[in-house]
Image (cartoon, rainbow, N blue to C red; front, side):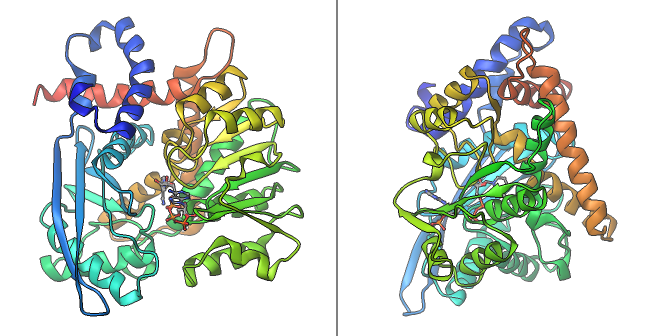
Length: 435
Ligand code: NDP
């Protein structure tokens, strides 16, 4: 702990895993005395590098780039790239650590990694984004490869950025390989990959609700965020007959009592994906909705909550409000959006609660399917990929129930996900010896 005491997000993620995995190790001799968790918290490799680029005014800018290669016991490092001014070692190590367990849960052969930069894409021109992505990849290309480390998107990195990075990798290495996932459909991308994290989150929640004889039909749903994950979570909830009443970004949230329908969602996508604008613009087109500046949507009464923006965006107080308002299910689309206090509140109230490493694993699972398609040099149909995604989410749910069901019947999905994820990585590490 001392070694990482200046890395609060990383410590938070490790603490949560340790609380559930240490008792499991204590009950299972095979995993004792091998320093498995101690080895897992130490990244196999951390790469930090200068990213210098020239802005539209001709000025030189300098950012910091990172790649955390956390664990390769079960496959090549795999995990997204985040561009956000808050990016630092602590945040990327927490994300890389979570990724190891998540990737293990998907049952696909992927190790864990994460990367990014403190570059702020907000307000940058398209050409500036391209120059930055090229500068970033110029260094990163030395450390990744289709069989070594396969990055993808995350906050601030979508199809556009992946395209620019892929182009630069190909230019530098003179090879067309599946080195990144989330690629455009014309150059090796997989159908359903853009939708996968949001859809997968909702599929996971469907599995949880089914254990109580419930479904999305007729339910009021509160979603945070309005980026990639939030957009497709909203889309799937609409398709399943639920009513989504909120979306948000770092400026605040919109509340639409009538529900966000497919047409309104298309407008959110235009605001965010075409104009790179603010969620408050929603009310210029839909004035019956209201915009609540500077706040998060958890005060809105709902049956189901899907936090899809960022880490630590739902605290203990907000969790109490959700429970008091009758919320029965929280499925994290983002990584670690609920603080430890919030998780405690949900579990104490015995409502359905899924941690991101289980419920948002559909994104990386579909990235795994993109890697398979690239290796086979063929592409599967939407239906094929969607079916595989549904199957994977349902298997992850089953694994969580297997390892997470308490004696009173309550399923602790946090414990279930951590232990199920741990077992496969630990077994592989034991087989490969101490390195
Ligand atoms: P996007 O960049 O597409 O969207 C992020 C959204 O979260 C935006 O609405 C953004 O608002 C909001 N947000 C970001 N930072 C903050 C902040 N500090 N405070 C409040 N709001 C914030 O990213 P994604 O949708 O891809 O990622 C969202 C979450 O899902 C992240 O936790 C990510 O790690 C996780 N995730 C993503 C996967 C993927 O496939 N994309 C896979 C698995 C997990 P604004 O526009 O104002 O910045």
